[in-house]
Length: 245
Ligand SMILES: Nc1ncnc2c1ncn2[C@@H]1O[C@H](COP(=O)(O)OP(=O)(O)OP(=O)(O)O)[C@@H](O)[C@H]1O
Ligand SMILES: Nc1nc2c(c(=O)[nH]1)N=C(CO)CN2
Ligand SMILES: [Mg+2]
Image 1 (tube, rainbow, N blue to C red):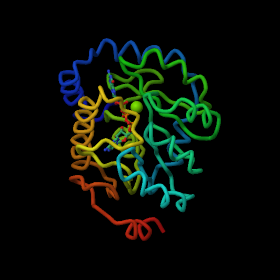
Image 2 (cartoon, rainbow, N blue to C red):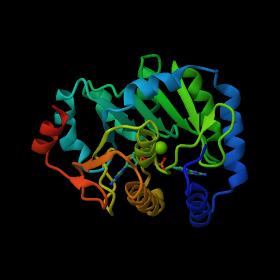
Image 3 (spheres, helix red, strand yellow):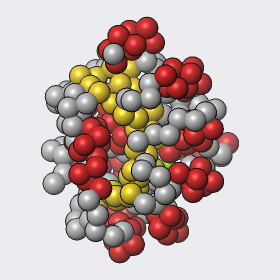
Image 4 (cartoon, rainbow, N blue to C red):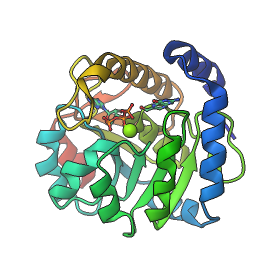
């Protein structure tokens, strides 16, 4: 089942970025054919339902978030794509990774067979990367088009905001953003080529607006330690310590 109102937003994304829905669908069909039937959904429910979860992105505040994250060993961490390289390098293994497979391949390979759950997004521009999911022990697939068979659509666009939509879908009690500084500065850990910067900023804008939309209907309490974002309560790291303990 798709989140109410997603179709309209997806059409806007197709128009803005000139993506072809047909290609998104083709990609999802390929991912579906590679994935095995699993009980990974149950694992995600156990990790998220009724819990406080952190969603970690690659914005500028990721650098200051890393020392804090080292202390939060038991809190569920949902990490977006390119944030996993600095996280893993600092000994922080996320519980869930949301990726369209354009992050650091070596890091993905390193933790592919751990208990980490991979939520892999198939879209028209990553078809040639989908084979990589064979390296993951725990993996589910998503699409931004219509879900079917093993392929889900929880809503969201960029890896980071899809992490928040995932946490909403699986009924997290509290969702706290770290390194999610939507705005006009691309974080240094984000693997964005110079030539892709303009498009990346457009993607971040779209991600931010989707999170504002989510804040209008989610039952989860929303917080951010990153740059202020409408609908999320801005908290300091000190306040985060209190919320988490
Ligand atoms: N200022 C920021 N710079 C970079 N990433 C940010 C920023 N603020 C939030 N994020 C989140 O961090 C996530 C991870 O960054 P990453 O560069 O891996 O993006 P991505 O979604 O994989 O983008 P794409 O696949 O289009 O290149 C983004 O999806 C985004 O939601
Ligand atoms: N077709 C298509 N869809 C996407 C793309 C992309 O590059 N192409 N990038 C995304 C996250 O950054 C999410 N969705
Ligand atoms: Mg990505």
